[in-house]
Image (cartoon, rainbow, N blue to C red; front, side):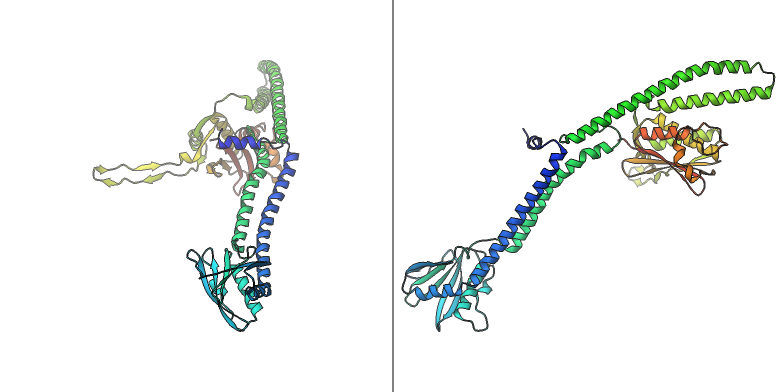
Length: 469
């Protein structure tokens, strides 16, 4: 079993409910913060306490030096000492020679360290005269500041060496700067470990907020799974209702076509040509309304395979079809990049044109998108005389097709209502008010939306769709 599998197995042991995970995450954050801050403060205060004790322990150190003539070893907190006969030897030690003037007597001494001292100058005596207690207190504090194991050797006149140690003061420890850096690093590591857990709580809900299928992460909470199941149930219920509506409207349409056909036959018997034309116009409008409503309700159920294609090629071919019929529709696409030929030893290479096709690659249903774009172009031509089409990118995940006309536009208070079925912007139009609703349905089918706004020249329709790659 790999490391990832072990980690996933361990995370699966966490409570499954979001109501249990949130308090656990808060508790873990509190414990991690308490441990890191506690360790950091303990280290800092322990060092500062050692410095304070060493600075105030000058009298104890002076008493040890004075009484060493009569005893060979002993202990007076926080120090311990012993007398050693013979010469001082420190082959593997790091020493700093010192001169101590105590009770008018000049004594040779040496500070012995386990590692090279960091601040050897701090061991020197101050410039101004000091009492023996103050001098020994400053010396003990300077030895503590080295943050290394140390001892103080004092060479006496009788040839013996007085070795003084302070295990609680003169020992290896971390400097305050290192303690702060380690504490900060530990805090960042704790945050780095907790943040993914916090993001894991929100990740399933971000997945649910997206359009299309919503595969949840393996560690999704029970609430996220329940929400996903409820959404799936609502989708199935909505799809069933839509199918039922489509079937009902199809049945109504089938029943209406028979009397419409009879009316057409009977209207042919009318001798009044004007009345005959009005009958046929009304019957044509009824047929358009029925067919449009059927298209709107069945657009999601029309079978079409998804393909990878260049949206710019689809738009360009659609615009060419309109231009072939004499309609004033222009495609303002990006011009290809022209690279001239370069002479080489073997001849002259041909020029190369690099087009922007790859910039509009997407995966979707081209026939439905062609129909949505046709509805938007037809809407622009119905209310204006010229239509322009452009393509742009909305980041790396979405594309936008903008259709602009030079018509009168739509009253601002009517823009939101125009995407509803059977809504018309102007009473003089010949449509039934389903073209924009169908385009909106196709946009939603491709993970996007249709937006309408008035531009300076007319109406601007922006069809935004996901690339789906």
